[in-house]
Length: 257
Image (cartoon, rainbow, N blue to C red; front, top):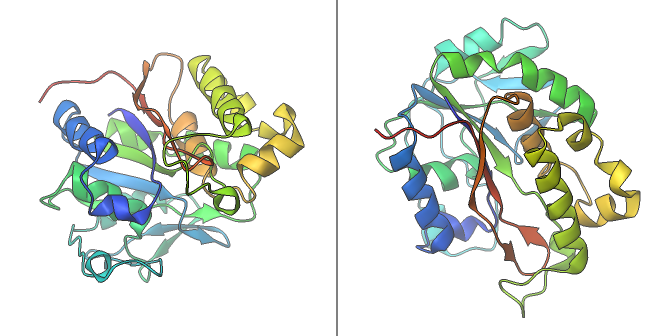
């Protein structure tokens, strides 16, 4: 299976029809049908690595201050406990029955697979790991691809809510463009080690692009699950409100259904 990283942006994308959500729908039509989807979401951060093992994961509305219609969305995809169990054979990954599908998952999946008929599960972000250690774990989950599982990283290449410019819906600050460009150059070069050490581009630049790292780390799981044989394309590129990169990255050859 290919590997996909998606910039998720506002939760409102879950119920809106725009260029970004149209891209998600088009992607699902071009990609091979997965046996399951494993989402590494910026919105599930834990102490230790957890894998969602529920057979029927609930839809988690992990946000506040949005219209009621967004809270009424349900995404009743089945879980993938067998795949979760295989990942949990790694002693550092703990099965978790309590979590569900947070909006980092269902806000993307409901556009890609609106019938909710593809099993879905999540792998958490261990808050104790360094970026390099996240990359190492990512290399161990690469096996999922061989079983037809789509690895989906859900975060943002640039994510700073503190500096949002509401007056510029599709603009970008210079620092946001610089960090986004650094990431793209490293992805193009298949340079996983550079992506796992973003502070080398400047600690101030990193701190501005990511005051906290949870939206960046899912990219490392995508990068670590691929290699130089995988083609790279960018199904969607753009910025929201100055400080959020919506770049999507597809690793691996596409295949028509």
